[in-house]
Image 1 (tube, rainbow, N blue to C red):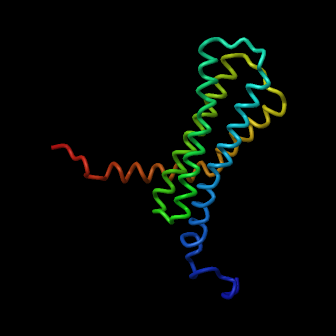
Image 2 (cartoon, rainbow, N blue to C red):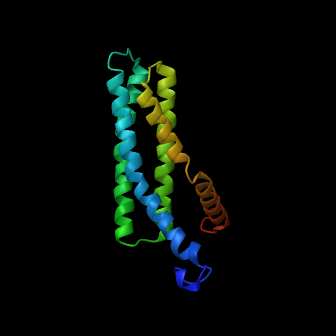
Image 3 (tube, helix red, strand yellow):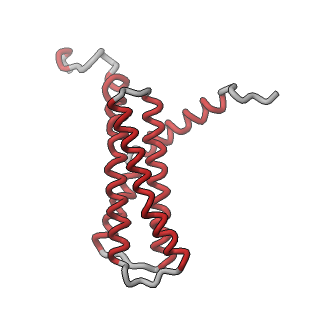
Length: 162
């Protein structure tokens, strides 16, 4: 590659360009996950209005209906953090927590579907699949980050036994 085509210092592309862009993408992805999850839950309810939900399933559906609002709040916090140029580790933590929570929401939606015997249209089944797949993107990178945070926590002496 010609030297004139380099972005940043030679050998620094990952640290100086790719990694910061990944942080931005992860932070902004929370909003689309929140919106997709909100739509998914509303569509699931609309397609199953006549279904006889038992008390447990009805409670779970109502609980799930509140969860995209929490993801939206995290999305707003991440976007504000980008605007205020907060510490990258804090931004990573917000994005990691949001993605983990979104995966938990999807697991609970899947369990509700399986346990209550509700049916999914082809479109809703595809939507569920798409959301689950999108949450798996960069999963290995997030696992590495989680392991790094765990090692740092274990090495920390903040709460040493006396």
